[in-house]
Image (cartoon, rainbow, N blue to C red):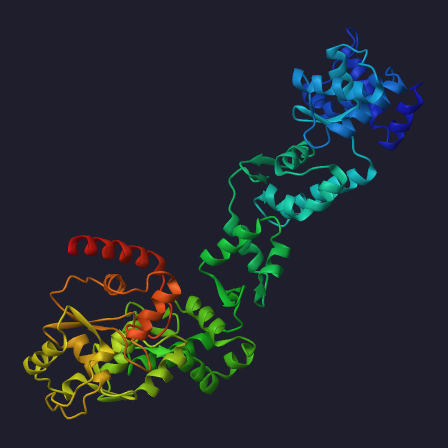
Length: 534
């Protein structure tokens, strides 16, 4: 207590060091009273700090300054590792460069002094922190403890680093997560520990999904990623997004916006009433769309409509899909009874099956209502397209298949021919509708015994693709393109190849995924053919 520096430090610490030194003296005295082991463990940090202060009093000021400067200038980021000759050698080199002579101290003394003038974290010594640095460390630790106090089972070191990256670099010269982990553990004081890549105070295990659910349950309005991560900052941003997407009760209600579905402001009685309305609709139809669901709510569920006024059709549908999941199946915009799910393709099949005559505008209205494309394959499995605007059910037309195929034989001298080249319909058998490219497309798709349709897809306006012999070796449209291009001079670029395909009528647009590899294969086929011809 005669040392002024110790007295000042003791006052700053509210006499903790004075009490610690008294215990230390008693413990080390052969005649004194030895304090209980458990009490000693509690006092160990204070005892070590007190011993360090005493040791430092015998350290010359010039030595202390020099060692502190070397530590701060050259060992900020990775620290100085005691007992390692490579670190000691670096220290001696930096010391000699700065002061013009090697340090006078022995190797062991160098390690001891470095430990005195710095702060030891695990097996490395880092520069001591000033008040501003200490404040930052305390802020970070306080933030971690607050997260645990709020119910979090984990705090990811990555998340802490992301949140404090700039001040950590500016004030503590910490530039990576490993260095941060060492700092956090050095200030844990038994309140948390590291497991894998995160900190925890929950010895029974970590549960990030429950951590995020705990936060989402407190929101009573949809929240975007930014708002959610502000509360769930202790989780890495990408991990938070993954949990949101994979947790059934947390539903997507808008772009990058989520909501805990059971918090939807709808009472049990209102849900029961809505369920009865849906059941009534499904007693007449195999499905209803979300648009029809919104109509039912607007017309017959005033309370739900009022309390969910700000929700989009997409958002409200997804919330109700989770809440009513035990009764109904919500497959995107399609709602059916549970266990009687329909795909989008099934919906178009059902829709077409119920019509004797169908317009393309009606198909477009259905696709717009569900915000999806027209599933032409499903529609044309039930109907025949007779014009650009009209379709009729299959049982309304009787094809003379043998006669039609014989006519097509004469139009296809090789294995295939582009559809636009099949345009002489004058001698085709009468079927009650004028022959045209749309009718031919439907015939090849579902009736011909000798030919089939190969194309990229059906489209709303126009007929593209090829009439291909069924015995020709073209398993798919891609293999057809390889053969088409191999017989052309359009192999110098993707632009040239796509333009050739469009000009010939195989497809409408100059776009095909994987056209580069198609061109390469076509070149090989062409080379092999030319070799054989020679």
